[in-house]
Image 1: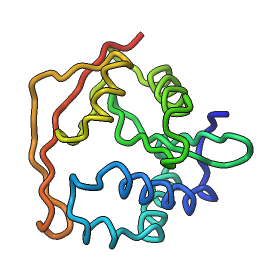
Image 2 (image 1 turned 60 degrees about the horizontal axis):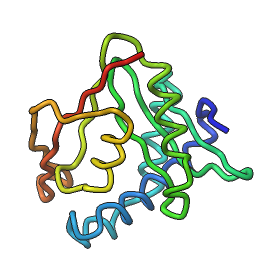
Image 3 (image 1 turned 120 degrees about the vertical axis):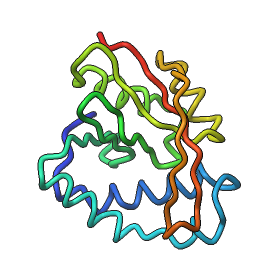
Length: 155
């Protein structure tokens, strides 16, 4: 089941965000950075965004919130699942609902250039790199992210 997130979902969204980053970015980001991620601080950020009307969906399977997506303004900002739910179709279901909700001729997302799993997922969903790249720093400049922009037409 895909449904709009509520502020009450923020804690589990924070947990999913951290668990997904720790699994997906192992070997792609510094181990100490990933180990230091805080589900509670992520939850606070998600609670603020949801409370302010941000577009966030959650995916439930068998009563467990197993993933989430954030989007708006022609952009997919985040799509993460608990690692144990990868490969079960929940990511695709979340993605498809986001694409239905987005408006305009096309949408964009940014993906870590070294995240081959995510890039392959998005290509299967009709996204393609459009040639744009950016470098972003996080963790007070200690972690550098090289990202590629993907684009896809909207229905």
